[in-house]
Image (cartoon, rainbow, N blue to C red; front, side):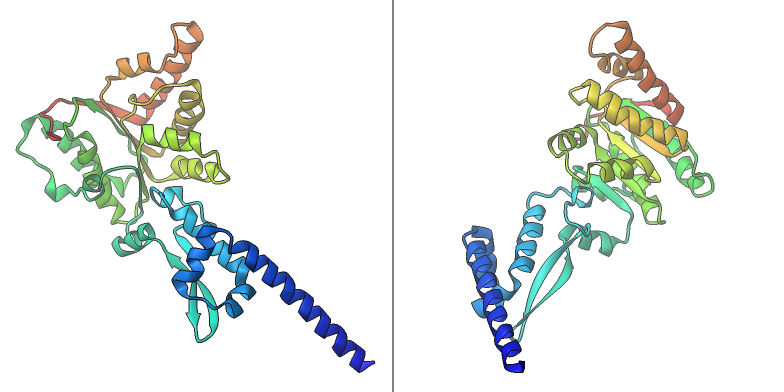
Length: 302
């Protein structure tokens, strides 16, 4: 009887090995999988026993290709990729931080940027140009906001509109980046890009991304009005975000090249009464959340 059991185990092991080798041979037909094996110089005798794990590595590394930042991470553990390490004829797997996660850990900030230039991501109050008198009123408002925020987290933000390249976004982020160093969670969003990305990627983490924007301590929606307005973007995205943040007294900033009146016109898809009502609803939410200020200055992007 014992001999029969041993023989059965032998055949079961042979069947398992055949299945694993078949799965490995199939996976090798995928260029990215084959490239991974070659990169780490993994012997077949080791690799075929870890095919499913190596396929997971390939999938997560593929998710990282073209990734715009932590807010858009598709991997199960946000900011990390499942990664192999060959140790003495044995494969070990661990979670390695991506470049965005490494930067976040290094800076120890709570800021997530959506498609904003590095210059804006590094903006600081000490670097603000205070010689331009046209910006004095805005700078004063932002300085008072910074001084008071930690004692009053229900403060209004700004709807800051004005000329192209006048530094609207830089001034706001210079203050928000300082607050991030004091453990305030910040999301700074180039709004037209956010809409395009959400529309193109109705993925499983869609709700998670929106939920973050709904609940982050301070949210900046940059360049509102530059997007191609649709009922979906206005009512389902912008309206939902603003309504939730208004209901929960969460500080919200918006920048635009349009005055509040021009923005209302932009948000009307046509001149019908229903469209006017929907556009007006968005504007009322913005007025509840922000103070309206204008910044007209030289174009600093030249």
